[in-house]
Length: 346
Image 1 (tube, rainbow, N blue to C red):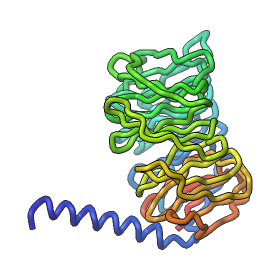
Image 2 (image 1 turned 120 degrees about the horizontal axis):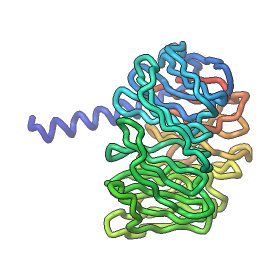
Image 3 (image 1 turned 90 degrees about the vertical axis):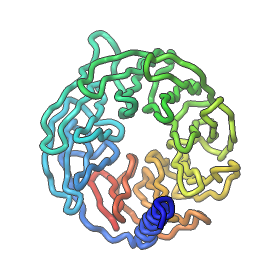
Image 4 (image 1 turned 60 degrees about the vertical axis):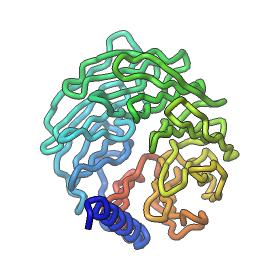
């Protein structure tokens, strides 16, 4: 067998294995853990370790198999966004603007970027990594680029007066910044200069980069796809409600959630609306997960759904008893999500 054929066979095997894991999802609880306060961050993973943060500022490393605490770090304020794993380190953001980098192995401090004195440094989302840097958006309308090695400020880009409420995206050598005023900016990471952009008629969520395209959604109800090379618009689809999540892209579809609790699936190539599923009317803020023919989504009313990717019909739903408002994680056939407590389900 040639190397090319072997690679194709391996990729096919991995794809089939991942699909079988999701399709075998039964909704059975593997473990459930209550922490010192409600979880306010998304969930990230590194090896056998889950990483997440709470309202009190405490940041946790948990055993992925059991949920037991490995270590905890006491931060200064509410943890925001989804932690960023960079090699053996993890970076997380806090509402007061503090950015902290810890060793995943033991939770020891690597570096910390503290809020700038006499500036409004508050933020509502996490960091994004790329090109040896970390990018963070603040409510004062500034995008900061930090050195991944030491947290030092490298450059600042001023987006506008209405502020930045979502993390930037990164891919294909560019930073993609969605602003509250509906402007999407394409920025070169080596100097922080805007080279191009686009936009919508409402506040933008975090742009997502995949396969040479950038996808972004807006509170004006639109989801857009743009070819990054030459900045060519591909499609602009209206889903009918303000979109409250970044796009999830995978398996030929783009999935988003809305303020009214609607999950919408769009064909990745054509932009045609494939289906809509109405939950219980409560807002969706955690990015959907597309895995093995299923779309996982949680609502602020506390219901978790696993929807058929092709039809949008529910395969499973679960009443968590608390708001599911942050990003979940599907890994190794297990869905990890938070509804105040941390829940592992398979």
